[in-house]
Image 1 (cartoon, rainbow, N blue to C red):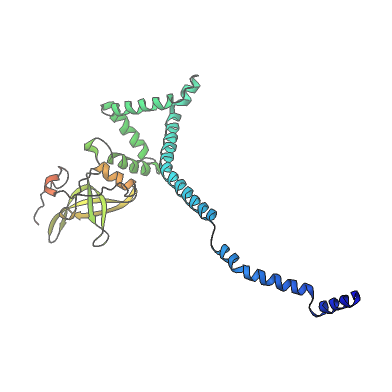
Image 2: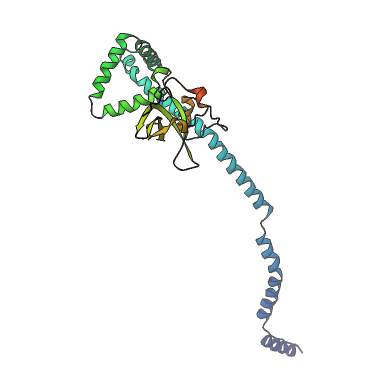
Length: 268
């Protein structure tokens, strides 16, 4: 009997291999489980979603911190460079005398600048300044640099008699419906065959203050906003970021200065 059973088992193994049957059974199980597995992979888990939210929040806060600290860092960096630059004029003298105190050269430079401003109001100071300007203007390259720098410094000078920029102006430029900020530098009479008209020389900066275009615009076509020259310079230097939300055009007759609009237009 034992031999007969063993022979039957062998015949069954030959007809249906046990390994193949096991693979088919395992395959059916895996196929039945595959939809749930794929669905679990297609939908992110709660940990991944939470990690993405945290990553996005950290990135936004980090960028906000950079935006806030960048202008502060630039301000302190440039101020520190300026202090070291000004301090370097007189600090070598004190170091040579055996006095090594940081900031003493900077303080001495401020006092020196103040004394220069005081001395320029006297005859001796103005004479020395004229002599120095004459010497600088004889230099080929330095004369152009000095002239441009002097025009910019005169534009922001507190002395009203030396203002290079008389008023802030808005002109229609370059096309209809577009406007440009500029500064009135002078007023002239333009003679033509049909008559004469008063025009203003308007300087429109194209690269901060030291480069720009000059336009001759009729006085009646110039819009004068309620801005001082200093505010106009701040607008140009800041790239337009300091422009007020509302600009009011002031009546020409109420703001005519003794330098602008003072000429009587002659009849030709």
